[in-house]
Structure formats: structure tokens, C-alpha cells
Amino acid sequence: MASIPHPIQYQGSKRNLAHVILRYIPKNVDCLIEPFAGSAAITIAAAARQMAKTYLINDLNRPLAELLRLIVQFPIDTASFYEKLWNEQHGDSIEHYYRTRAEFNSTQDPRLFLYVLARCVKGSVRYNADGMFNQSPDKRRHGTLPQTMRSNIYGVSTLLNNKTEFSSVDFREVLVKAKKNDLVYMDPPYQGVCGDRDSRYFSGIDHEEFVIALAELNRREISYIVSYDGRRGEKTFGMLLPESLELTRVELDAGRSSQATLLGRDEVTYESLYLSPSLSAKLNHIPADYHQPKMQQYSLLEPHTEYA
View 1 (cartoon, helix red, strand yellow):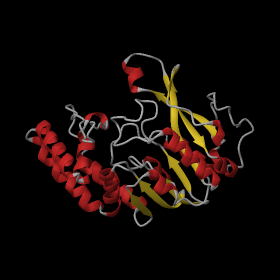
View 2 (cartoon, rainbow, N blue to C red; view 1 turned 90 degrees about the vertical axis):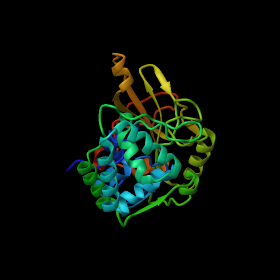
View 3 (tube, one colour; view 1 turned 90 degrees about the horizontal axis):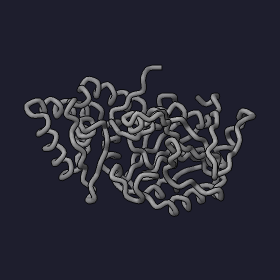
View 4 (cartoon, rainbow, N blue to C red; view 1 turned 120 degrees about the vertical axis):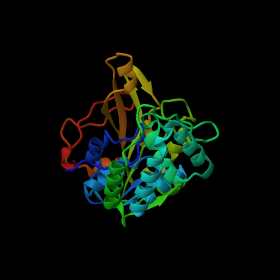
């Protein structure tokens, strides 16, 4: 199939792992729900494969959630705004970036956010303690070309328009909407980096509160997938989700990290994927070597390819 469109540059998104994660999504999903959508990479990839009837995109970062809505519902205006702003940078592109970043922090205009994300260093999102976007511009490039951005915006709009709900609320408000034939995919912030406050995210979440929310989903028999902890070499990142949740844990090969490459280390990053009990029960054609690992151990599992 044609390449999947992605207008929003977002370091740490699940774009490169999406094709693997989607293998754990069963057939005939009514609504795919992303409470921590970020760039909505999983939603976009699932829509490209027509894996759900409808979609719910939520992120507590309001300009980001609103930007996704504008891309889907108003693609022509959004692409034209980006093109105009992009064309204005060539007098002094660095000064133009800082001026646009300051205006975004002042107004929270999501259209400005699209340009800032496309122009900042490696799409690497950073916020200061006051919640202001503070990443520097990439001095080697001018951001996504307008024609490329327009194509990506139109592509996402075609996939998601008239079948997607958008919100910017606490993740727990989104989870209460989930029904038994829906699938919730969660990639919450901060895990394994620097505690409750990670400069890559608008806000963090509390581990214990998150575990309580997952237990409630289990009680309601809701199917869900969680991307949470991981490791690189011998170093682990983040807290494991507790054994009491009875989750199936899969370890995904995410390749060599950029940091390991820069340091000349042959270290592969692995990310954990947790499948809820209700979801595991729906994946009923699983190879014989597929098993539930002990929560204290990492286990490399092969996904079931029927759902690819």
C-alpha cells in the first residue's frame, strides 16, 4: 500500500512500530481510542488499514489535539496557512522560527504549532517548567516542504474525516467512553525518563492512578493495549505494570536508539507492549509458542500475523 501520511513531526511517536502494534488489534473494532494520541500515529496507521469503524483522538495538550482536528476537518485551510508561514522564513529563518515560537506560546494557535514542530530540532518536542514550548530550530533544514505537508494533511483528512471525535481532557474521562467492542491504545507520557515531569510532554501522569484506571477497564472487560516501559541493553526504563492486572506482556524490538548510535554502542531498544485480558481472549488464533510471561521478566513474543 502507499506510504502512510504523517503531517506532524514528533520524536518518540509510535510511527515506526505501528505496523507491529497493529498486529495485536482484533478484527471488527467499533472505535479505536487513543487517550494519549500525540501525533496519532497508531490511529492514522489503523485507519489506513480500515481497522476500525470510528476513532477517538484525545491529548491533554490542547493545541496538539486541536491541530489534529484542523488537519482532519479543514485540510485546505491548514495546508495553506502552513505554506504561507513556511514561505515567510527565508529572510532570516532562525529569527523567524523564534518569533513564530514566541507567538505560539502566547496564543496557543495550533496552526503555528504545526510549523514549529516541522522546523524544530529533529521533531524533538520540549517544554519548560511553565509549559512553554522551548525547543530550538534545526539550523540545517527549513522544515517539511509545503507540497509534502499538503499531501500529508490531505492524506490524513481522507482517512479520518467524518469518522473521528477529538478531545483534550484527562485520560480517565476518555476511558469511561470505551465499550466492549472498542479498542483502547495507550502510550502515556514520562515513563522511564525523569519521574513525573518529562520535558518532552505537556504533563505527566501518576503511575498508581494509571494502574487503578487499568484495573477499572479490566473490570468492565474493555480491550486495551499499553506501550509503557522498556530497556536498552542492560538498562531498563520505567516501572513494570503489576502482575495483579493479569496483562500479557510483549517486548518489541525498536531498533538501535539514536543515542546508542552516536555513542557507537551496539544496543537495541526494546519497548514493552501490554495486552489486556479481554484483548488476549479475542486473539484466539495464537501460535503455540505464544504465552503469558512472568511480569518480572522480559519475553520476546511473536505477534499473530492474521491481524496485520
